[in-house]
Image 1 (cartoon, rainbow, N blue to C red):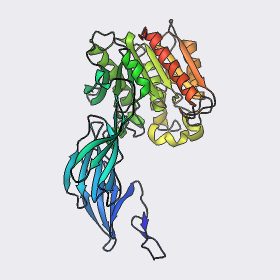
Image 2: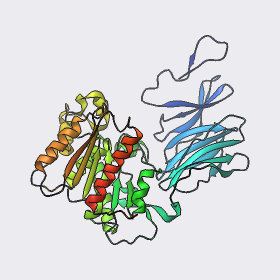
Image 3: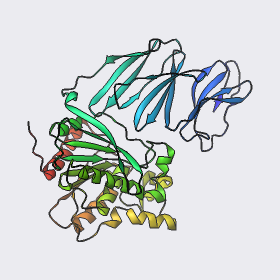
Image 4: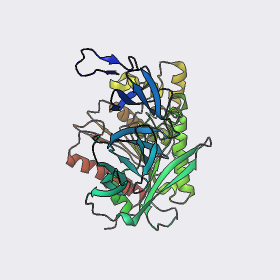
Length: 426
């Protein structure tokens, strides 16, 4: 990280070599810089660097919650934190004094705080599972928020509800999960339920709106998002608890989420579907091997299925810090223990499974899904179908036309509806 004063020829280093830490400029106060960094602060903090004295001052100390970003506008700092997987926004002056919290419409995800030094307002977007992305205007002086623009979506969000619960995983860890459904549903074990998670690469699965989910909810479906370990929901420690030799925690967390939905009588195994993509496709593949009795339907999308050879194709080598590498003896044993391709067994009735991939996926090459599908089809026992859907002229969940997107969504939902016995009511 370097700076240069106007009129000077050369740049002066603030941090010449970042090493394993991250630094980003938030703003400058004259010859001083507000800098966000995770040096000696896994959840990040904000410090003030004085170019004259080359000294650092802590402005916003590290908190138990991860700091997702800091913006400035109107002489204020807007710090975005993730607390129990939902956004919190706090307003500070440039000296680091906390002034107030921006009250959001509910539990959800917000972003976009920032502007110019003389701005009177900032604009931000808020969304949740049944709340389409809506732009709000925040008055810096009065601390009041008002709707600036909202989309027109033809459904009634007041008919649905989202709650956050915390369930217990195999090792006793409390895992958060969001559950969205129509208000007033009966917990009789017969509600079609879709359980989704990702669980890796320090990526948070936060509340967000998807129009494709609404028809399922309107038909009486229940959507559950499990914030399993491996992500960034609680900072780097949460990530580390679900990577490399601790990857089994991810699968245990997801299995426990399914068991929670069944125990609470949202569904039974015959009404439960599980879905995930990419690293989440690996998750679904591993879970149906370990617990084929957990659910009725599984949809692993563009998944990493061959954990012994993943690093030999395209960008796969870059995932070794997350998964480990089979060239290492200890990693080999761990990877072999859960690799979806290598743990399919004969004589087992697996869930109805739709594997999806694309012929131009150069991130998770389609060979992963090809081999996984072929092995499952060979060894599947019982009447549940095992299909593979191969999109053409498309990549890793991207590059689809509107028509292709509609067709892909229709196929996935139709497969799930049919195998759960859900007959749509219009």
